[in-house]
Length: 251
Length: 79
Ligand SMILES: [Zn+2]
Image (cartoon, rainbow over all chains, first blue to last red; front, side, top):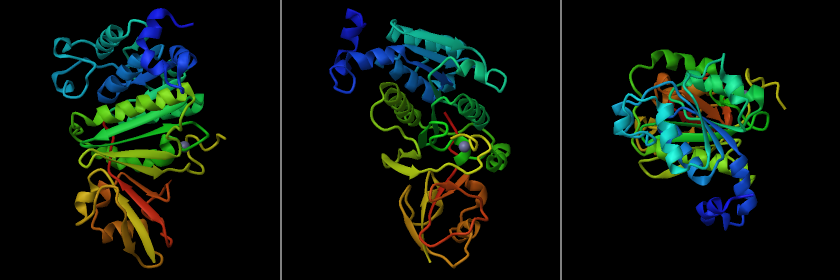
C-alpha cells in the first residue's frame, strides 16, 4: 500500500493508465544498481529517485573533482574531495527521503561484481571505461540480470538494453578482442559535452522504468544512437553473435 | 553490387558529404571486404571501433554481399 505522502508525491504519474497505484508499488519494490556516479549515473539515478524506484545502489570509488561538475549533476562545488557515493546519497536522499540508497565505495571488478549485482533486479552501466563494461556485462550475463548499457563521447551517445539470452550482450556487438588496439591506444580524457550524458542517462532511466513497470518495449536487439549536433536519434538493429564468448551458451 | 553504409559519432566528418546516421549508397565489386570498403571511403581503420553488417559484428576481412547494410562506429566509451 502507498502512503498518503507517496500518493501525493507520485500523483502525476499514478494517474497514468500504464502506472496506477500498482505500477507505483512495483517501482517502490524495484532494486536498481547504478555502476558509476558520473555523468550517466547522475542523471539516471536522479530520475529513478524522483520517479520512486525504491532501492538504488550506487557503485563508485572516486571523489568529486572540479572537472566532473560540468556534467555530473549529482555533485556540487561544495563536495569537491567528497566520495562520489557519499555525495550521490546526499543528493538522492534530499530529493526523495522515501527511498533507500545503498552505496558501494569500490571499483567493480571480477572479484566483487557478482556479489554486488546479485542483490538487484536491474543494472545500469554508467561507466567511463571499457574494461569495467566487460566485467559488468559478464556478471549480468552469468546472473541473467537485465543490463541497461549507455556510453557517450563528445556530442554522441548510445544505449541498449541487454536481456541475457534474449538479445545480444555487450560482447556480441563489441567483442573484447576487437577493442584491444583501441584500449591500448587510448590516451587522455574522453571529450564529453555537458548535456550528452544527461540525454543518454535519462533514456537509461526510462529503460529501467519500462522494465520495472512491464510496459512499453525495451531497446533489446536494437541500439539507440544520439547525435547532439542535429538532435537526432537513430535505431540500429543488433544481433547476437553465434558463439559469443560471453552469452553464446545461453538460450 | 550495391551496399549501404551508415557512419556515426564523428566518422561522418571523414567522408565528404556524409551525415551522421544517414545511408550512403555505394557500389562495390563482388568479393569486396569491409576492410576494402574502409580504404575506399578513406577511413583509417584505427578510427573505427566497431563494424556491423546487418546488425552483426564483423571483422575487416568479412566479405560483403549485395544489399548489405554496414554501420561504422568510433569508440564511444565515456560516461
Ligand atoms: Zn553475447
